[in-house]
Amino acid sequence: MSFTLKKAAAAAAFAATAFAQPGRRTTTSDDGCIEDMDPTQMRLAYYGDSGMAVSWNTKVKLAKPTVLYGPSGDLSKSASSSISVTYPSSSTYNNHVVITGLEPDTVYHYKAMCDHRAYSFRTARSAGDGQEFKFAMVGDLGTMGPDGLSTKVGSGAANPLQPGDNTTIDALHAKKTGFDFVWHVGDIAYADSWLKEEKGGYITPLNTSDHGAVYDRILNEFYDEIQPISRDVPYMVGVGNHEANCDNGADLSVCVPGQLNFTGYRAHWNMPSAKSGGLENFWYSFDHGMVHFITFNTETDFPNAPDEPGGSGKENAGPFAPSGAQLEWLRKDLASVDRKKTPWVIAAGHRPWYVSASTCTQCQAAFEPILVQYGVDLVLHGHAHFYEREAAVGKNGTSVQEITANPSNPWYIVNGAAGHYDGLDEPVYPLAPTSRKLAVEYGWSLFTVHNCTHLTTEFIASRNGTVLDTATLYKQRSCDVTKQSDRSTTWQ
Ligand SMILES: [Fe+2]
Image (cartoon, rainbow, N blue to C red; front, side):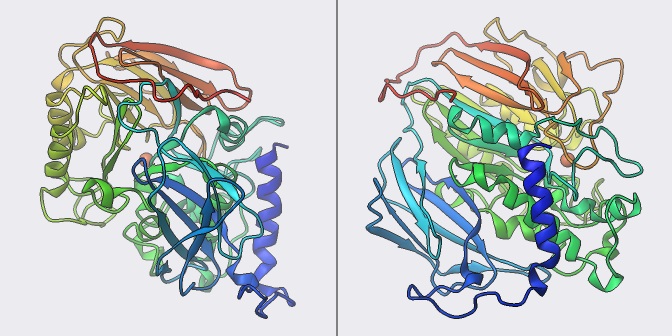
């Protein structure tokens, strides 16, 4: 059994009994902490090149969430906030603190209040830092173990892990010193599979009066499982349809308050939208070295968005901003990019429109003209549960170009193959005319930004680390980047 699956099994067993256990420490210790203030689900997110968002969960509300930090083991500085939020049906509070005034590309040690040990992170590289770096990308990654993807399947699910397989969480954990951050482009945890798992005979149903408890349990298990990654490297997220509510396998009537309208997703993460003029965890951008990264929202907040009331996804969610706000922000954000300093622009939104599966035509209508107009280099998607590398494609599928030939069109990669309870998808044949490589296997993507002209992708099988695809995009251009450090991320 893999590391993650062993931990997940233990965590699930604990979760089932934890709230009933007598003897939990409730008395206040010298530092003012009680056991219910112990931090769980530690997670980081970039906040410019001089800041870092630190978030964690606790069983109780914190009056003043605080992080101690410093350049070494000396945690003499502190940052605080008053943000400790929960929602109906959640068993935890989400605490958010942003540390500011840091140096770029620098290691800091940090400790959340009431934690027993410190961890460390490295701040973002400044825009214009021309040093090569790597980042990881996953899509459609769910909880592993007895409440999610394991070596068994329930009725209607498929593609169980084989004994000894590493999960995608295992794989990312093993390689986390080899990339600067993780980008999870939607469908996070798959807590909404709870009823499907019950109906499929995979997990034991609770009483109907406990509706909602399993959803909360699966969500917490996922965030516990990724903690060994997300507390050490920034874990940047985009929104997917499975964040909308709890109704996978049923309809909205099964969802209790707190499990509708992206509530958990909105509460849990703290993406740098305030820093980039975006909105919550829905759309935002950030610079890192030679790249301007953009996360956009394919679920709500554009014409005919699939998850809005009346939309094709039947999720009855959003919108979250005035009409037109997201697309206006996207245009403005792209117009402001200094391509001499960040020659690469990489955008990610959950639902694909060039893929050998059903396509999000309304997403294409909204986003593609803008991405093409501003010369976005690479567009990443998930949602289809396989890996497919596409060509570089012009508006409406025209002018298909190869990535080695200095394409002017955006290059598209779909990777929704990280793994979750439901398994993988079979592509639709014949494959899309833009398809260049297909892999129906659990895996993750590693990107290497070499310099301002070359960028390589690898698709790596999670189970054994085999590289199933590699391809390099070439752009003929000059830029104004300088190597500000000789550090490079390395495998360990
Ligand atoms: Fe999806």
